[in-house]
Image 1 (cartoon, rainbow, N blue to C red):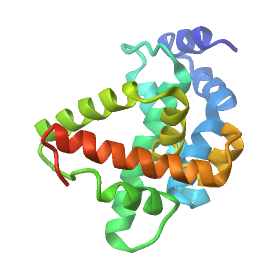
Image 2: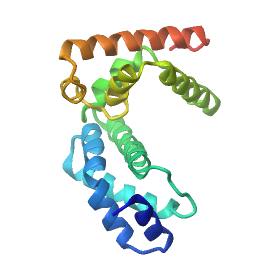
Image 3: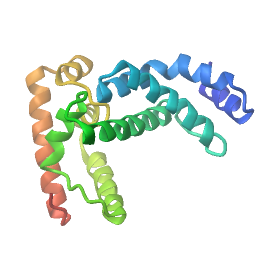
Image 4: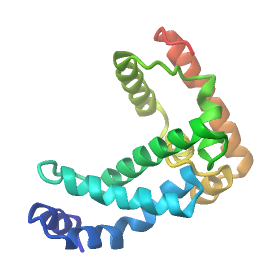
Length: 183
């Protein structure tokens, strides 16, 4: 089913929209949640929450790309769930490793203005990267792919992926320092 048809089902408040969303994008959402949560039960709950959140925001929102829309919702829900469980106990999925890699680069300000500024700076930084470098960076830190998965998806060697990530983190650190943001 086409995305426009799925969106039309949401606008018609037809519950088939959820079934069609799960059929077309459930695998993507489960993969994202599983990489963050590393628990089958938490992953399924997160994906179910994704469909509920979509149901509550469509309408009035009309996403341009359903894959990105569902991926963002799933990622945010999974990270919220991960943070909640992580404060209670150490452990979890590959999010631990990915977030620790970026820890020395990014500030963790709770101030909403600082977070908006950081988001805008990150978007600008990402736009300035070469497409293949940006893809590697996003696969690692947005989708929480392992280095081996990134190598397989991009056709680069594992060493090339590791070097690219290291260099990009260093470029990001320098970029943020130049903009007055320090960890």
